[in-house]
Length: 352
Image 1 (cartoon, rainbow, N blue to C red):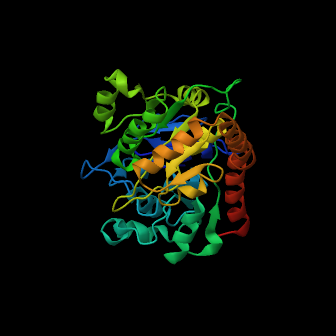
Image 2: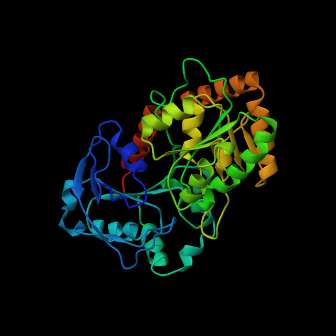
Image 3: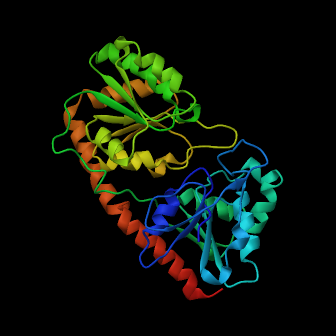
């Protein structure tokens, strides 16, 4: 059984794709994937959510009979739902897995009640499933036992996210991410102004939604900017957009409680066979490896990297081919879901 919070359901989908696994999800909205959905609401003492731990409890968990389940899964150590699940499964045979992306060794929320209490409850979990290498380091730094930690990198559906039959010759840059300050759409818009001085025909297509949507709408309203707002797209829409682009670009920057952990959009772009240009932030180097381009958080550096790719078609082709090959080898969805299932099976084989 999985208790997804209101931020993400990617991990739930991956679990539903593990071989020989039946997943029941208590969630407010129907998740996608081959699973059983139990519609559940959340009790929220405040209306503000933060990246590192949703301040909410799922209702009606106590109505679920522990004997019906082998595992209960939650996201992140200091999520209050993680503490709730730990209490629910106590004195039963149900094992607990905590999925984590956390890469801040000294996450400030760990010092704040009730997140601190949830962190303490998480220490009894049977499995800590890390989606990035840095999450393992984070766990070790915070005193969690190494023998209960497994790292399984995220997967991407390489059948959906696949290169176009013919790569585009148009200098099209894609930004596909939340339109929020920490993802850097403002930096990319500024960089494109510089890019268009050298590549006047360069265009930026923006897919996503968020608090900075108005900034993008104003840019898109001016035909001189070369900016187009595609809005919120489904997976197939994103895949089509990426496959017909020349370069993918974001510009993340940290805030007091968050830094870029990995970035699934990077995988999707690379699976579509296009280069990635982005700023160094947190541990996104785990996803964005050479021959892609990581630059400092500087508008001119972003612009220079974009110009390099946009004006060198052969380079784009080489980088794109290398990206596609790495996604097939290291991040194919079916392979990674099988590896995730193996992590569960390994812990079960060890006994409690």
